[in-house]
Image (cartoon, rainbow, N blue to C red; front, top):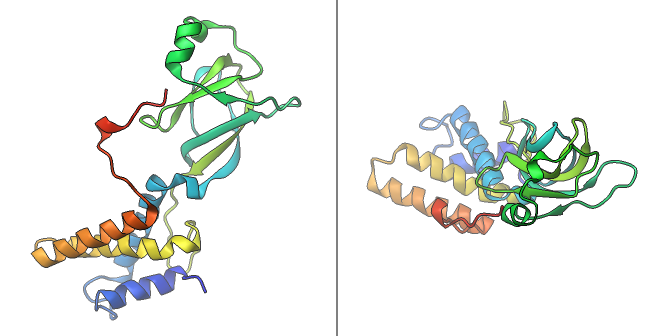
Length: 209
């Protein structure tokens, strides 16, 4: 049976040898769980993918809604024709149609551009009329749980991976002790390994626009 949040907090307290929640309170552990969910959303937005209709503002530059973390794909126009929308590169569009940003706003989108260095912004071609709707695949923004009886929004199969992030946060609290620093680092590595994360420096991230 899949873990629930209460069981996960119990497991973490037991592994910390603090079943009475003396050093780390239940509120602390819930904070660690919420931080783990936020980290999961950053590392694996693909595991939280949702189909969503987006309403475009007038023009070529668009912002994601506040409850969306990042854009994964834009699939088609949400009108009667449902024409496909394809992803392209900004430099390609600039090369073949340099003045595209000043084109007359249209009722259909043909291409979109998205750069993970600015995850909440995306561009559309041609510029859109206000109110044009498109179908998209998005990752939702993290929503913290108010108490441990609430349901997690990370899929249940990933809760054991979140346990390692919670232990990383817990041991980091007492990071002045060398042994705890090592434990924190080990659990962070286990969390990243479980998620298949390859950490890259920001200057190594290839642009996608």
